[in-house]
Length: 126
Image 1 (tube, rainbow, N blue to C red):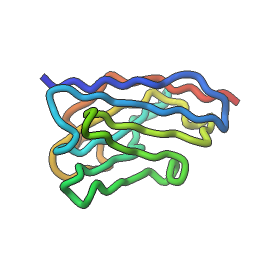
Image 2 (cartoon, rainbow, N blue to C red):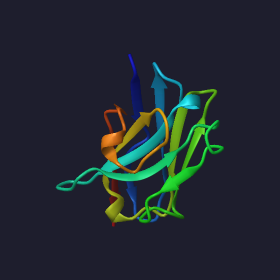
Image 3 (spheres, rainbow, N blue to C red):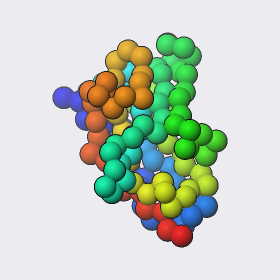
Image 4 (cartoon, helix red, strand yellow):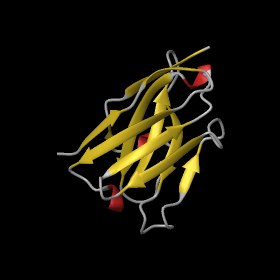
């Protein structure tokens, strides 16, 4: 059974940093694409970042325009863990952050991802 477990969320002041982790069991990130989505209160879940597995396009990364230059997605295949380093956090980054995994090409479309974690809360205060 596949399980994705996020950690690293919390409360941080605007301008600060957090690193989210997503540990997988039942699948290997070395052969699956990995992504992060977020859902703010009253809003739909939205794409944040994704990374291809290393054998496909050399682990190409994709980012939403709203986080480009501030967030970095990475993967440690030895630990079967994906990370989201979030710097220069803004109040509008406040959301529940979800880890996701899928086979094949990654996508910004939520509906194309078939494995999800439970989410971790990130709150950015002004």
